Image 1 (cartoon, rainbow, N blue to C red):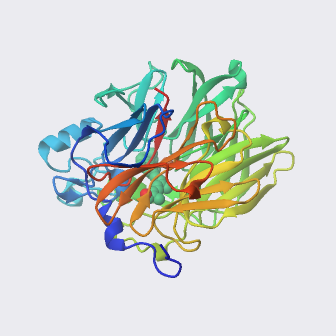
Image 2 (image 1 turned 135 degrees about the vertical axis):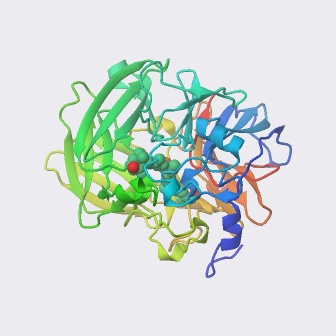
Length: 485
Ligand code: 3ON
Ligand code: FE
């Protein structure tokens, strides 16, 4: 479809993707265009807010929505679908009560005004951001609290999981783990690396590295002056890399019941962003920090080392896309916001210099690389992207970047399709980095339902390998992962 000069989307359609999906389904997907590759065996897990209202009262921001996990089970050319809400304490209690009982980090308030919210500092652990399978456990993650363990077959919630005593009640555990495909400290075995933030006047970053059986291998911490809002990080064989966005935190309106904690995070354009390199090798002491001009990063695509240099590729915004107290996310004026763009930061550890280059100016989010290249030099990157090359807009296409040649490919679902994170699944016995499938959940705004698109990683523009039509919609989600089982 030719959409060169006009808007590629319709605001009314786009916002329908933020309607709650209160139902839980399980069925074999039978409406399929193309065909599911028979070699594709395993499960795609996805997480995201499933409810955008509680008992009819809208929540203030999608990031406050209760986690709903979807699973697509692939076996011998067939696909089965299931979705379940994570039975967090908050979900269960609110569904029983039929009304909002908790304040959300991003501004959802209990009914009754500030008097009914003042000094209520309880966090509702909503388990809505990511879902991973590691150490024989399926874990739903939300960065401000503990993981929830689910049954991978039924998606039933087992309980909050303390990772065999690694976490204590009340501890955070981020929603952005990396799997190091071959860890040099563990004789080349894979390990899972994740972090936790304890924000404050000085903020503590704790790192955890886990063996494939789930046992803790290493735990180390670093404190950095100032408040932190750090959603994601990156790894290389030798470092964990954090961007400390320049923010301050004003807790007062939150304490007084006027707004959510996250709304008190204020972007400081006059202060630099700090890049923190924490060594993964014991004793983890030689932490180095570098400064660059202000910007806000949620997601990093990947990082790698070349000699004295460390490169990190990240989706950066000119400023924190602020959640406003009196605004409605469903009426977002995309044109008024600066888009996220992909930048490469090259840190020279010998002289402390950081070079910054714009890799992709098209509005993009949710970067994803071949998991075998995590922390290593890599060539290909897939992202959710806007249909048009300029301006800020909803994500409607999947963009593939060849970082070696600069060749770009876009598979757009505009004007009615709205994409989510693209998940790259290498083909069995693949020899090329882009030899695999790219899976993304697409919301069809014209017909109000969702479909899973399976694209060919080597050739996005060839058209979809398969489109699996669901019987209902899934609200716009956050992150997911592939599990070979
Ligand atoms: O008060 C402190 C600051 C803070 C904000 C401490 C804290 C830990 C309680 C905290 C909480 C942070 C949380 C809970 C963050 C959760 C983030 C989340 C659920 C999602 C983030 C998504 C990021 C992006 C970039 C999403 C993009 C979406 C689209 C492009 C549209 O589909
Ligand atoms: Fe994220």
